[in-house]
Length: 61
Image (cartoon, rainbow, N blue to C red):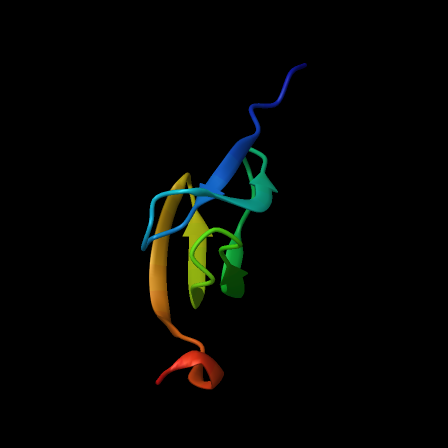
């Protein structure tokens, strides 16, 4: 029984983040950080679809 693991992609630069998810993973209001472009946001992830909920208030300038 092999599970398909995928990388969460940054919504800004489209680079890989440090977060991997399995097929059945559900994330709600998850703080996501991209080490490449240093973008922080809050996402929801379900059924293989990622949706950006908002930006982290600390990083808004």
